[in-house]
Image 1 (cartoon, one colour):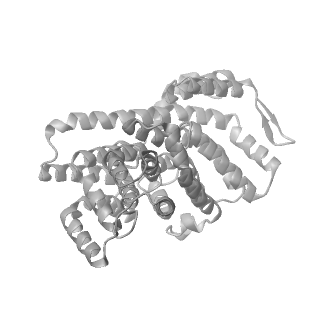
Image 2 (cartoon, helix red, strand yellow):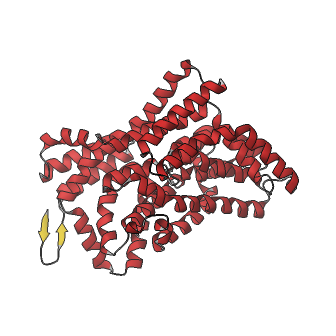
Image 3 (tube, helix red, strand yellow):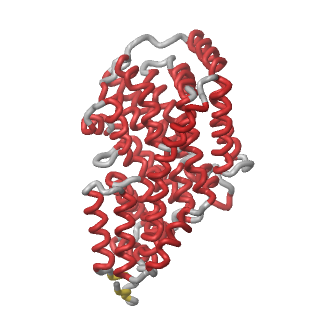
Length: 442
C-alpha cells in the first residue's frame, strides 16, 4: 500500500485485493457470510499490519459490546411473540377492513399489514415469513397469480428495515456514531413513502390485469365493518403504539422500547390465552437463531472496517470518485448504484458495516447531510431484498410456497422500479429525511 501525496490517492496492493478476492470466492461457495468476512479481515490485517492480530479478539467483543445492540434481539423476539399470540392476524383484519372499499383491497391490505409488522419487528425476513403464511394463499384465491402474490409479499416486507424501529438503523447508527432514535425519526417519512410506492404499484398492476375481482363495499358498509374490526382488535395496536410513543417522545431508548414491547406482548398473550409457558423455549430459540446470524456478521465486519480505514481506503475511494467527476448529482447517483449492486449480492448487515465508513466521507465531501446519507443508504439497500441473486425476501416466500425464485423476481420488477424512484427522491431532496428532525440536524 502506497500513499501518493501529490495526487492524494491511495495505491492499494495485494494486501487489499487478495482478501477481497478471498471474500468473493468464499461467498460464491456459500460459506457463511460471517466466516467469509472474518477470513478476509484476518488476512488483510496479517498482510497489511494495519492492526496487530493480538487485538482482533478484543476488537470483536468491543464491537458488539454496545447497549444499542441489545434492542435487536428484543425487537426480533417481539415479532416472534406477536405471531405466536395471534396478534399479527388482528393487524391483517384491520388492514383488510381499511382497504375493502376499493378494488384490489386484499392486495393493499397485504402491503399495509407488512408495514404494521415492520413497525414492530424491524426485520424483513420475519415480516415476509409471517405475512406470507397469512396472505399468499388468500391472495391466490382472490385471483392473483401465485408468483405475483409472492412478489407482493416480498416487496411489502422490504419495509421491515425501512419503517422504524429498524435493526438496520440501529446498526448504521452504531457504525457511524449517530443516535438510533434520531434515525428512526428521520426514517418515518421515507419508510411510509416506500410503503405508499408499493401500494400504488399494486393498484396500478391490479387495474391493468384485473387480478382481484368482486364489488367494493359502500361507504356505510365499509365504515361499519371498520368500526367492528377496530373494536374487536384495537388492543393489538398497543404494541406499536408503545414503541412509537416511547421512542419518538424521548421517554424510552430503542432498547427500553423493545423490552417494554416484549413484556406487553407476552402479557397480552397470557390474557388472551394464546400463549403458554411451553411456548417460551421455541420462541427464545427461534429469536436467538435470527440474532445469531446478525451479531457475528457485525463482530467480524468491524475489524475489517477498521483495517480499511487504517489503509486509507475511504480516502482513496473519495479521491477516485471525485477524479471521475465533481458533480454532486452524478456522485450521488454513483453511490446509489454501488448500494443497489451491493444489496443484490450481499446481506444488509455486512453492507452497512463495510460500506458506510467508505461512502460516508464521499457524502461529506459533496455536502450531503449525514442523516440523509443514512436514510438513502438503508433505503437503497432495502431494494436488494427483492433483487436476485441474493434477494432474501424472494428466498423466504419461495421457501413458503415452492414457487420459482426467478418467476417471483420477474413479477417484482414493477415494485423495484417504483421503490427506486423513491430512493432517488430521498437522495436528491434532503427535506424528506430531515423535516421531522430538530433544526440542528437540518
